[in-house]
Amino acid sequence: MRVDKFLSEMGKATRTESAKLAKTGKITVNGSVIKRSDVHIDPEKDELRLFGEIISYKKYTYIMMNKPEGYVSATEDGRDKTVLDLLTEEERRKNLFPCGRLDKNTLGLIILTNDGDSAHRLLSPKHHVPKTYAFKSKYPLSSDDVKSLEAGVDIGGYVTKPCTLNLDSDGTGGKITITEGKYHQIKLMLDAVKNKITYLERLTFGNIRLDENLKRGEWRHLTADEESLLLEK
Ligand code: URA
Image (cartoon, rainbow, N blue to C red; front, side):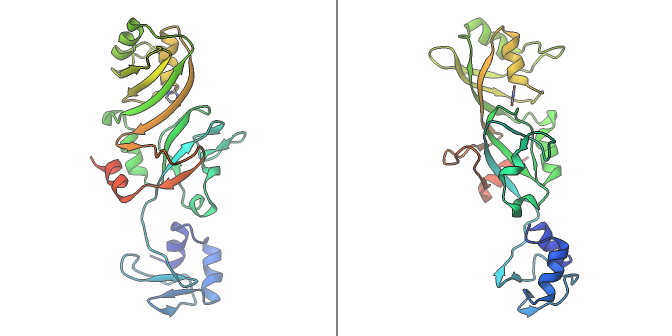
């Protein structure tokens, strides 16, 4: 792999910047300064340093973010801020995208990655990845509402798959776990039982749980264990 491609994939420098960094002696490979950024290296074996700091190669990046209100789950938007705006410049250079969508006013766990194949698999309806949300509703849900929602409701020509719902004691909220991801699904499900979602926060995505230490708008890389949990088939 070319050094400039390596540095750009690791979010460290654009190709033009890499050329300048090489020319000015800021890059070493296995201890020797390289003067050109089109030199080829083996990312797994060679030791590349930028300003003396080892840059290790990682093919893909996986990030968990606690999405705040008001941000859209997209890579760009003409009007609204996107979840990518919350990342650092270095991360933004890695061509990350949100793995699935949360509505603009939905909060909580969103995974960002540049691993297109895995994202595609995780989002495919075939895989039934469970997602748990905390919600609040405008009116209390009756036990019949819960039964209907769990069995599946018509959200405009589509009947939702069975899900599980645990109500809080006052009935105006709780946890709901769905295994699909239709547009506005939970809002439409509550509409279908003549109610209204007033608060929605995603807590889990597959085996990944939102880190309680992340404040709204904060993010971190998945740990190696979380990566394995996310990617296990
Ligand atoms: N269901 C919704 O209605 N909105 C979301 O953001 C996620 C699930």
